[in-house]
Length: 381
Ligand code: ZN
Image 1 (cartoon, rainbow, N blue to C red):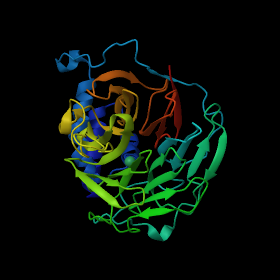
Image 2 (cartoon, helix red, strand yellow):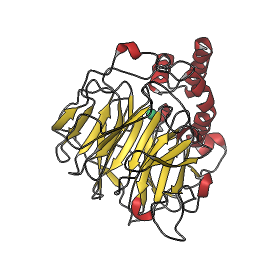
Image 3 (tube, helix red, strand yellow):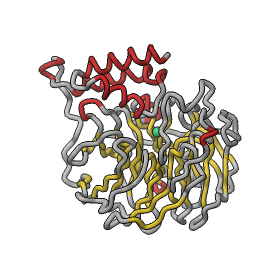
Image 4 (tube, rainbow, N blue to C red):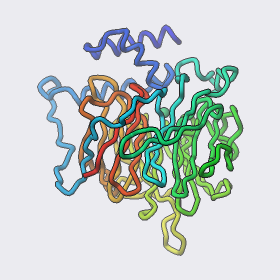
């Protein structure tokens, strides 16, 4: 398999021309996917590469996908933020706490590579123990200086982060196959779902769960995840209420727009965003959990290799990971139609953006990356 994967990497390097072989190989390990997945996603990469070539080379007329609208609050990079240099590993999650400060989740010295999991989805490095670093770091929204850090010896390969309206911290761990809720100020989880290191697809197990979205009533949603194809809905005590199973290929991120009863997911390897109803509104005639939201319906919208989504008002923000030819970017979509409203990147471009969060007041947007390990702040003007 390794030899086969190397052939694929060589093909990628050849096709990209501008990427030396050694770079392409190191990029392979940053992709957070194993070789088999690499083979699956190669066609979509090539299609994306083709879409970004000049029309003079492809003979195609590229449609204008960004509609100009002066009312759209296009994210503007905040330069020289954060003010400190962060000593962190791969930053996989970002959220905004109840004080509007950004909170990040990182993996210390642990990286997801081809040897991290066996073919049955079990974590292969349990004997290495949990991550020793403080994996959860709170930064000051204005300056980016350090506000708080905790989360050592808790996680093996954390992935998704959420801070709910009450200040509770939620983490998913793909090695543990578990979801945790930490009450505000506590370092001990008040809720643990899933069985440690045991992947599964029944009501008591997850398989590499990716993300959590929490409603104001405490009802929460888990995207599950790398191997299962479902969104699970739980009551505040952790009792399973419902499951929506879609035709997903790595449901990688989930965001809730409570006032619209909309739940949108990043269906990463299908390169699409899908929005469904969260089913939070009571009463006759209200949409049920899993019914389609917006004009795209259950088919969603093909938007590119989307890693994460976050929403505020009528806008849905998403980040796209493609490390070839600088094609990683962020985009803003209309929540109902999923039409593209704007495209944005930091001045130096993105590498491998992995998560995005918008502040509760809608004034700031944060993007974190797993390579280079960095956080970027954008003002929503
Ligand atoms: Zn991921």
